[in-house]
Image (cartoon, rainbow, N blue to C red; front, side):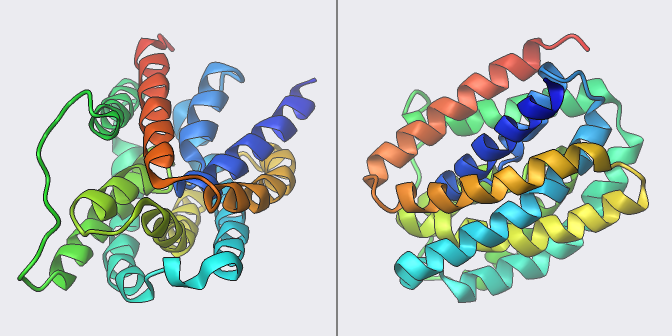
Length: 249
């Protein structure tokens, strides 16, 4: 039964990964913690290893459907920062307590969800009239650190940042975020492998179905209106944050 549940988790995570540009870690990390009773540090490494393959399928599918949604120049500069950030986040994860990791992760998701649903109405304007490329590198540093630290791929930061501050539509932000996630999570997974933080048995069941989910997720994302994607994204973040914050283990 456990193996079947992992297969189901993989397809759900892959679908959310490609449809929301979030990598899938926001599904895998809380599910492995809450439903499978995995220790958080092992969960994070396992999540990143699964996300790599799902992100690859998602990126290819998004590109085939509408290649213009992937802003490759933005990807380049964000990745410059994210690779460095991944190394920093993986090292920091080893030194932090599980409780701090869990609650920091929950607060991050809560803030993103409240902003995207409009419950917290903090005015934001796209950045203009300045050189945005150094800011994209800084965004990459933050995304890479969060990816390795929380096992989330970084999309929960990147999608709203690209949409709110860099002027991309939700469809563009999702496809571009997923493209950044691919090398970022690969780097993070390699660092976690070095620290022996990956459950290889779980990967055998999560990875195959996550590929299927990612394929269909990318198709669905391109058929939904931008406002619908934003609302779904926000509500999902809020629900995840509440469940993780209340977890006692």
